[in-house]
Length: 230
Image (cartoon, rainbow, N blue to C red; front, top):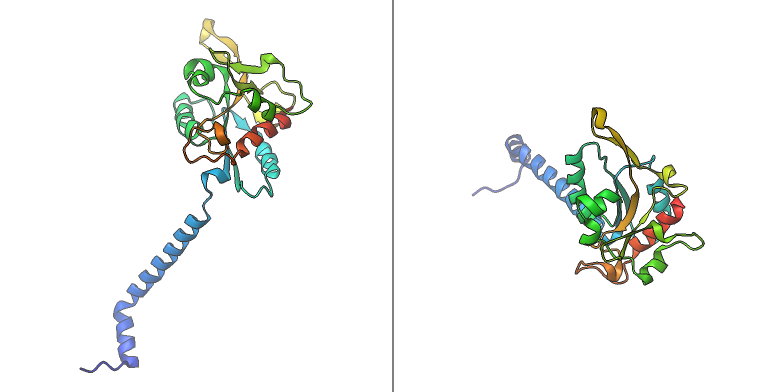
C-alpha cells in the first residue's frame, strides 16, 4: 500500500477537506475563550451587588464603592442594579430574582419591606447590637426613628432617602401619585437599606452554607454607603 506523502496528495486532501480544518480551528478558539471565561469568572464572595428600587445617579455610587474596595484583595466587582417601579410586573420579577437571590444589600421603600412582601418580618438580617456598632458610621448621629423595626421590635434596616447626600447618588421616588381622577393623591414614601441574609459576604450573619466567617465585605459596603450618603 502506497502511503507516501506527496505535495499532490496534500493538495488533493486540502481541496476536499479544508472545511474540516476551519471547523477544528473555530472549535479550538471557542473552547479557549470558554475556558478563559470560566477561570476568570468572579466567585460569589468576590462580588458586591446592591439592588436599588430607583435609579443610581450617573454611576456615582458604583464608582465610589469600587474605589473603596480597590486593592481589597477579595472584591473584584462592584455592581448596582437599578430597578424602576414604573412597571410593577417587571420590578417584582427583578426584586424576586436579582434582588432577593443574588444581591448583598437592597434599598427598598418601606411599603415593600413591611406591607407587600413583608420582607422585614420574613427574614432580612437583624441588625443586632454588635452589627449595629459595625455598620453605623462614627461621628454621625443616627436617631432611633431612623431604624426599620419588625413586629418583634428587631432592627432590620436603616432609612437613607433623607440623608444629606442621598440625592447625589440615587434617585428615589419618595413621592408618587396614586389613584385616578378625584381619588388622586400624593403618597410620601421612605426608603431603607437592608442586608440580604442570602449574601455570602456577611460572615456569620449569612444563612448560606458556603459562606465563610472571614468574608464580611458587604458589612463594610453597608457602612461605606451610609457614610457616603451622610
